[in-house]
Structure formats: C-alpha cells, structure tokens
Amino acid sequence: MADPIPILDLKPEIDALWPQLQEAIERVVRSGRFILGPEGEAFEGEAAEYLGVKHAVACNSGTDALVIGLRAVGVAPGDEVITTPFTFVATAEAIKLVGATPVFVDIDPNTFNIDTSLIAAAVTPRTKAVVPVHLFGQGADMDAVMNLARERGLKVIEDTAQAFGGLYKQRKLGTIGDVGAYSFFPSKNLGAFGDGGLMTTDDDAVAQAMRMLRCHGSKQRYVHEALGYNSRLDEIQAAVLRVKLPHVDTLNQKRREAAAQYDALLEGLDWITTPVRAPYAQHVFHQYTVRVSLGRDEVHQKLASAGVSTMIYYPIPSHRMGPYSGADGSTPNLPHAEQAAQEVLSLPMGPSLTEKHIERVVGALASV
Ligand SMILES: Cc1ncc(COP(=O)(O)O)c(C=O)c1O
Image (cartoon, rainbow, N blue to C red; front, side, top):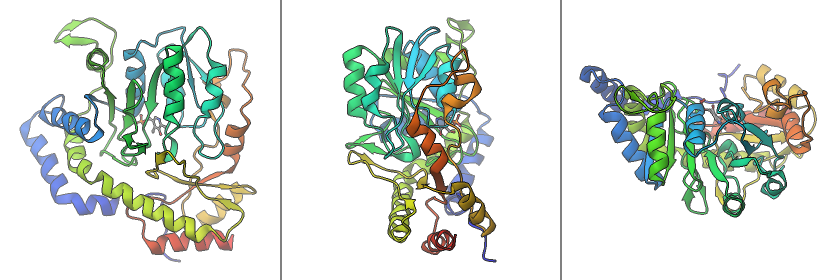
C-alpha cells in the first residue's frame, strides 16, 4: 500500500525552517531566560504589526486567551455570552470558566459559522458579549456581529484559534471585535512546538487588564490586585513563532491552492458538498471540511482502511455536552448544528500537501 496520508504533516514545514528554528531555540536556552523575556516581547510586537492592532498580549493557550479576554472586557459570573455550538469545546468552556452562561444560537449551514441573523433574538438583559468563531479558517460575518453589538452595548471576543492570517473584508480576523483570541497549538496555521496563545486589542485598558491577569493578577511583582492565572507564552515558543510568523501568508496561500485543487477534483462526486466560500472572507483553510450527506462514518472508516486520515470536527455540538446543557439537562433546538455534526468530514490539509496526495484522497473517496 502507498504511504499513509495523515490529516496534517508538519514535518516538511519544520524541515524547511530547521536551521533558523534550531538557532532560535539555542539562543533562548543559552540566554537562561525562559519566561517573560525579550523573545516574548519581540514576538508580541511583530504579531501586533502583522495583524495591524495596537496591543498583542501572548499567553499559554487559545483557551486562556478566551478566558482572559472575556474577563478583560468585563464578563463576570451571572452574565450571558452568545456563541456558536459548532466549534471546539474550548469556546463554551472559556465562557463557563469565567462564571458566565453560554447561550447557543444555530449556525449558517453554508459556512458552519454563527448565523448572525439569529443573534438579536438571543439577547437578554443579562447578555454581556458575543463570541463568534472563525471556524475552519473562514471569517464569520463580522459586520453583522459588530452592528448588533454596538447597538446593544455588547462586547465582542473573536475566537480566531483556527484562522490566523485570515481576512474579513481586508481586515485581519481577530482585530475587528474588542478582543481577538488566537491559539498556537502545534497544528494551527501558525503553530508553536507546544501550547501557546495570543490576545489582541486596540484598547489600552483592556490590554493592561490582560497583562495583569496572565501574570497572577499583578502589574508589579508581588503586588496582586486581582485573581489571575499563570498564563505566559514561554520564550522558546515565542522564539519558534518569530521564525514561523514571516512565512504564515505563504503557507496560508498553499492551503488555499490545495483547497482549490480539492474543489476541482471533487466536482464529479455529487454526494459530497465542498466548502462554501463567503464573499466577505479570505479563507485560510485550517481545515478543508466537506459534507457527506449519507454514511459519513462509513466513509471515514473506509478512507482510514485505504490509508487516508480524515477527522470529524465536530461530532457533538457543545450544547449537547454535559457541562453546557441547561441546568435541567435540556438542550436548545439547533438543527443546523446537529446536522453538520452528522455530516462533516475534514480531509487531509496543510501547506505541504502535494497534488499527488490530493489526487489519492479524492481517488479513495471516489472508490468509496
Ligand atoms: C475554535 C477553537 N477555540 C479555542 C481553541 C483552544 O485553543 P488551545 O488548544 O490553544 O487552548 C481551539 C483549539 O484547539 C479551537 O479550535
């Protein structure tokens, strides 16, 4: 059998940059500074410049970026936060972790992102914020989110974990709302060699709150004003990310080219729906996710037997999971999220995916 095709192969990307990566890691180790040092500071500056935002504050993970971002804009116990159920669980988890209640609204079945036409009806006097997620690398409809948020006095935290470098109408995702939250989990479009995250904002006071919260609630050493976290990006990860950041646009472009090739080859398979591009977004294809209307799980299994790894992102929408259903165990009716969970299949994707790989994946699908 031919070599297996993984869902993502990071090795070629790492091999190509290895001399610079090795130098960066060695520089940190020899410096003896591992936490909150010059690499982190330089990375924050370079990330802020790349994204076009006033402040970038690095932290330990995308989950922490959401938690700290929510707290920094004032989300507190008792508040409600409107979000999508069709995402990685960290989105809803972060809302719960700050003591607020996630209020789920259904998704747009075309883009898998929050259906912005449903947000207004979910607003109550307790609503404090909205968390749109730019799922699979494609921006949610941010004009609609921002117009409603400004009208109703709500904060907006963009979950940009899957969409580093993606655009909404020429603006970088994560820089449109009050806070952007990014993840540098190794498989992300900009990935570290461990956990990492970033928060962005144009608001000086919010940035100051983020810096304080990520470091045990302190602005000044051993003076602790708030209950905070130990959530810093370590210097090795910052140095690795500084090497990778200048290449992220090229790598995202390669993902788009792979997606275009998939689109063309999948055209003949009428039981597969390829990803719909929203006119306002430039997709960065963190995932290339299709819909398989019948027998998705069987297709997933058969591809695995043919040596092609695929993933189901996500098999259970957040509102169906224990911690996120109502106090009485009840769940809202969100038919598009439910249907997506039954039908989605993410195919191998990444900047190093070759034309031959894509042909093999589509060939394996066709023979299913
Ligand atoms: C949509 C989304 N939100 C949040 C996160 C959390 O990021 P992390 O794994 O860095 O905590 C992830 C990634 O894992 C994600 O995909």
